[in-house]
Length: 203
Image (cartoon, rainbow, N blue to C red; front, side, top):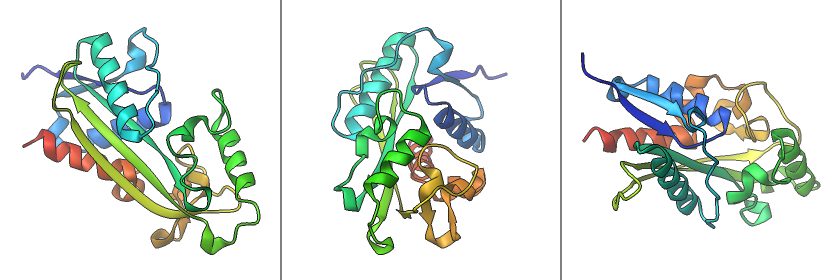
């Protein structure tokens, strides 16, 4: 039997871990990989000091490689709202503070958009996935995905995480939180980036 290759998911976000694990399990390309979240190791998360999704993803991937000695995939993603000049952007997870919950962030976003007309509530989810073989890897694989939609005036749906309940997906006539895993994977920023990454890894 072919030995399994261990791959670290460099995130402490349970929603991202579940989503990435589900996506990776759907492809033969990673059938011999053992995908483990960084929480399986006892080390602190990297300081996300970058000003772009690319910078932060590289920081997190390198940190996980350094701490485990294993290859790592890091995700940095967030929501950019046109009416807010791209905010919350790289600060999406901590928009309402360093210990903010998803509800806290959503409430702050809805307050910031109060009074903004529907046609001016365009937004896009962005995801950068970085794969590094080691902390010294000079050529990390970098993949990006974008998912366009608009922001609702109140949360709708029970699935997903983060800003999914207020992100309206026009082609599905539903919020991202109303889509099942397969539907979301086919459309989402993270699904797009992961598809690109798997294509690169299997070349």
